[in-house]
Image (cartoon, rainbow, N blue to C red; front, side, top):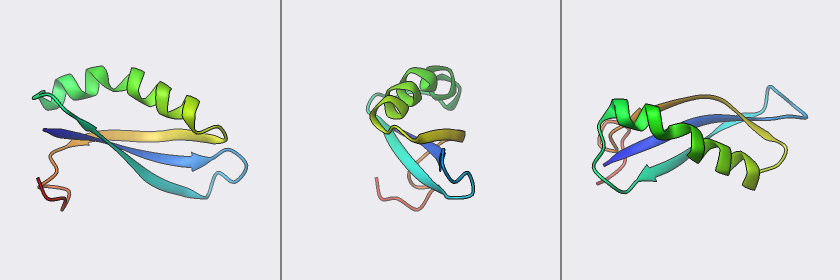
Length: 68
C-alpha cells in the first residue's frame, strides 16, 4: 500500500499550503504510484476549487508515520 502525498496551496494566498493524502488501494510500486498520480491529482483539484498541487510524492504509510 502506498500514499500519494500532495503539497497543496491556496490560489488566493500562495504562501498558505498544506498536505493532502490519498491512499492507493492496490499493491503498486513507488514508480507506478508516481506514474498513476496525475488523474488522482486532477480529480482532487476539481473537487477543491481554489487550491493547486504544488508538489507530490509517493510513500509507504509506515515511513510517513501512519499506521498500516
